[in-house]
Image (cartoon, rainbow, N blue to C red):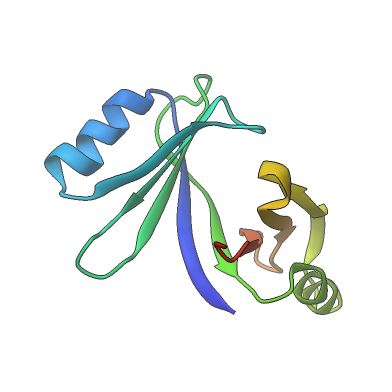
Length: 123
């Protein structure tokens, strides 16, 4: 398991991208229509590969932390293991993006929202 990204809710995607890319030097990897959110943007620090995921929620009063994403080899297995360690289920494992991504959400014992995610290997 390795940290994949930090996710934040934003109420203005253009403004957030301008701040994090234009002013703070991150680069925009992709900006797509979302399933659970209206829009999703993935930003990366080119010097070290660390990422931020921006989730458009126009009802959010301000930019706020949403979850930590951890990349795992097997989402279902990691989900089952953590479920038995005091994590509570928020959303059981499911496929997104036509099966290119498998993910799930739990709450850690201290209340932090955790995403377990596996990206398909490019062919």
